[in-house]
Length: 301
Ligand code: NDP
Image (tube, rainbow, N blue to C red; front, top):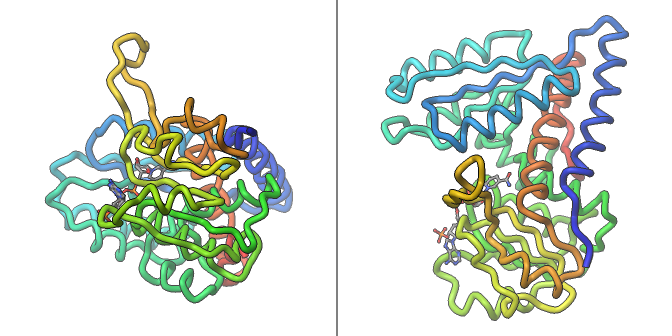
């Protein structure tokens, strides 16, 4: 069994990006600039945004964090998106999800300029992904593909089972892995809450990608011997013994599944790290597109 070390690989990606930024600045260009809008003060969202901003600083990107109160009106939020869309010194914009219930997430996602949509959530970018056109690939699937590539994991001809069909993780992941590409060329089964006898599918997976948001849901008896297991889940469980008062748990029961798997991602230190690396990479691509007026290149092809 080998751990797919998201920290190590994301550090590699970030080091490469830092070199590219230094070259860019040495040529007299400004560094890439990522803006994030955070609505309210949900603990998990605060943590995610803080680590994105911190990663920008580490590699020399500029970053702007716009904080809006939880009761902000949709119009005010859309006005902020429009302001950043129009700001030529900002290359990428993310609006941290989830948004408060009174705000229409779809409307906000669509309001972000597709050329600044480094999260890859905009319908135009998701549509291009489906068509195999150059685009911003949603950061979590892009990060997983990068990890598979850097570990040289064979995907061609494998049966990949994706559990969870969200627009930001499961669905794009299933599309990327089924494409005629490397990594890719898998035969993909996409499972969800209506799947009957889920274990019969997960047990047949050479590559199992789990993104459902239910802590330690996947047990050892649901996994084939030698499978590659990618755990996307992040759930905060109360833990008074931890200084933070909580611990982060994935969707896979790591201790019992790891001995059966050939490769497995830990939580934390796996997919989450790669998501941030992919987001930074998308921001670099957005900057390159802005400088040269090119179309964004697909992160994975
Ligand atoms: P969603 O809640 O949007 O989707 C969950 C999916 O899981 C749905 O498709 C749902 O099916 C399916 N599901 C729920 N229960 C079951 C079940 N019992 N059996 C089979 N399928 C089930 O989640 P996200 O994709 O946004 O996130 C999933 C997890 O990944 C969360 O823990 C989230 O925090 C984490 N995450 C981690 C990231 C990272 O960087 N590591 C990034 C993004 C998310 P149905 O469609 O039928 O309801």
